[in-house]
Image (tube, rainbow, N blue to C red; front, side, top):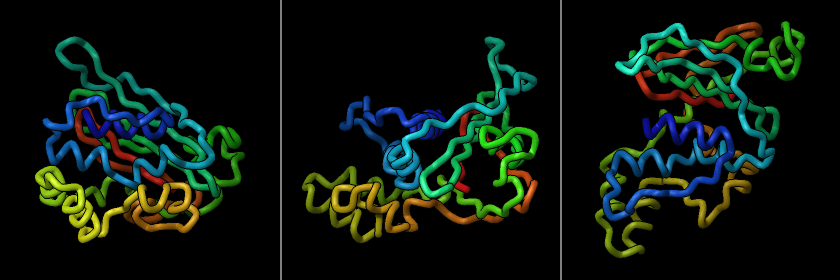
Length: 202
């Protein structure tokens, strides 16, 4: 659920504020909160929120009768696009979205020029920090030691290089892991765990 929340906050350009007690922060939570590829979506200079392009209620519901799946899409600076598969169903789902749907707001019914192009797919959660590295940061009581852990891990440091500059420099740490390509008129597909989300940059 934390991953789903953080994905949506970033895609919707919400203020990213940590509301938890940092003294109780777990390594797995830190790896979500410090994912530079996801934060880069939130900090994208175009500042446009993603919009929901599909809502599916025909999924397994939880004990309270609640459950759905959603697909969100949003334009990014430089012509890129963010896509979020949000699974709020009570089971894992295989989700997909066509380029026609993804670029619907640029022209419905296949009229968007992007539908006729090929797109590289970048998974924004694939290169998440390892729990072991995150735990070393948490265990570092001296800031200089924590900074050394971050530097040794090659992790993006937005204090040294702001996100707008990193995006301008095409820093690969802000673009996720390339996992494939969608051909013209093709589909973006992914398995999404129950109560979680997958997030992609095209």
